[in-house]
Image (cartoon, rainbow, N blue to C red; front, side):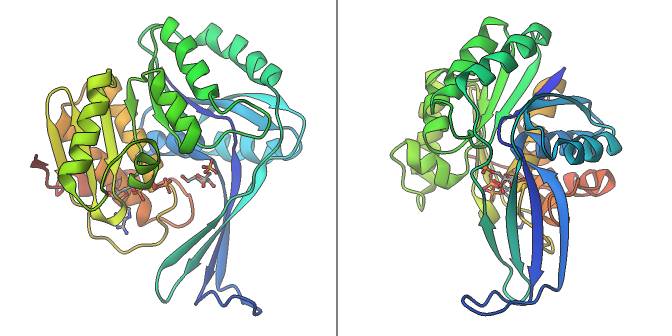
Length: 309
Ligand SMILES: Nc1ncnc2c1ncn2[C@@H]1O[C@H](COP(=O)(O)OP(=O)(O)OP(=O)(O)O)[C@@H](O)[C@H]1O
Ligand SMILES: O=P(O)(O)OC[C@@]1(O)O[C@H](CO)[C@@H](O)[C@@H]1O
């Protein structure tokens, strides 16, 4: 089974403007609302890949119905630990003229380490050897910044394979517990290790150092420049697929979904990176944080080129 864990879910309100004018009245051309948060987005893309996942984590009670209905309508199974409080709303401003994306992410509800332990005590009861657990996104206020490390240790005791996608301290401490796979973007990687983002060799050697620590699969996304995939078997590069951009929000989550799918189905490294690039491109072509189209992914994957590094 694949589980996705989102500790800090969000309602994503995407606003499309001609151009954002600071300090002025801006008129919206179009808008949409999706439920999001990184793990939830991973479950949506797994659903596009016809793969079942259970979407779990923490959900604030106040607007929980909206999340549960949205996911149930997509046919995604949920098993959240509900606590008091309201799930945040994150604003995503898309400027049509220049395609600049501005993310305004709220902090979210407050939770306690006790809430986290309550969630873990029942979640860990379900997890079995060989399960894949994706943990991703920011941590809510109130829990320790090494919480992902703590969760990874417990999941490893259960012999689950953990895929981590986080930023800053949560990524730093999470990596210390050696998850099975990670998917940092280049900015996230720069914060946790010495690399020169403009030098491919430097990024590659950074990724290899991580594989040497025992992390089996390191997928580094480079935004519109593409992605590098480093494993014990080799290192591979894929340019991003040139597509009309509707929203890049969740492109990284689409890659994480492909990575989880590839681990489950034992895809080789080249097919894994092809699928990750196709899922990300399909997501970029999709409005807001809506689930990308399965047929589109299947079409693009055939044309993705991979270069061995
Ligand atoms: N403008 C674009 N056109 C085509 N593909 C893109 C574009 N931007 C990103 N991608 C694809 O999406 C992948 C992931 O992008 P990125 O590195 O921005 O992830 P991220 O920062 O983790 O995203 P998020 O946190 O919003 O999910 C890239 O490796 C690339 O394949
Ligand atoms: O604030 P975090 O948890 O780092 O990121 C949250 C978020 O920006 O990530 C997803 C896109 O990756 C969105 O659905 C959501 O709003």
